[in-house]
Amino acid sequence: MSNATPLTIAVFTKNRTNPAYAAARLGADRSAQRLGARTVHYVPLKPDDVDEQIALIDAALAQRPDAMVLVPVHPTAINEAIRKVNAAGVPIIGFINPFSAGGALSYVGSDDHPLAFNIATYLCEHLKARGDIAIVEGPRESVTSLERVRGFRDALRNFPQVRVTASICGDYQRDVTLRAGAALLESAVRFDAILAANDVMALGMLDALDAAGRTSIIVGVNAIPDAITAIKGGRLLATVDFDAMKMACVATEAAIRHLRGETLPAEIILPVQIVDRSNYAQWDKPFAERACPRWEDVVR
Figure 1 (cartoon, helix red, strand yellow):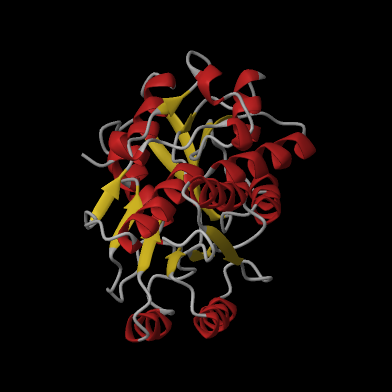
Figure 2 (cartoon, rainbow, N blue to C red; figure 1 turned 135 degrees about the horizontal axis):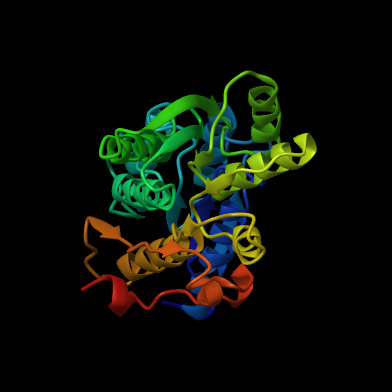
């Protein structure tokens, strides 16, 4: 790699509203800087907008980056754009959400179904295997949300006296969840606890409950700093360490290692862990102070 001309990695995330994607951009920057490369970020102004991400991919291709690291805003709608990247010979690494077009040299993520199964089981055990639950889903076509909701429901089958009384869509956005949660709280539906498919929606439900003067037991997914603060304060029961920053760290390093001639595994799956008041200390720091994983620890 030339010191005069550092490698350029084009990094695509889905929006600027979800703190997990801000963390992902930070992770990509940190890996690139450590390895002597540079990042250029491409983020839709309208959250998760398909047409805008396609236009951003075209714009990036015009600049001829050395590689791309990409979270698709939709599992199939950007397939033609992915094929254009492949045709242009630009290496691409997928992370967080897989895409169906093929052509990715490697994919970095976590297994959404078991992590959702585990956090739902944790919640049911906390409820002593009895009660009513509301589920807050992400975008209807989000692969992560679909798998997490499937994991929730599979876990609930083991607890016949725990029933789902409502399922609402929060689009992985705090303000959307606040509005959907407010409508739920105004209805006749009753629930003892909430399974949220990400922390942002868990926090949105806390906002709705606060506004209504009510409380509920809530779990989320992501272990973002605001969720850890809520766990410390006893407002959130637990979350799961689905770490977008670490995934972006690894995906960016994978792109650079490929450009240096290394062979990559087709898939790199990061471990996850339930985070609650018994163990939150290691996550009780801003993303800027959290460590990127070592390559040797995640690729064996």
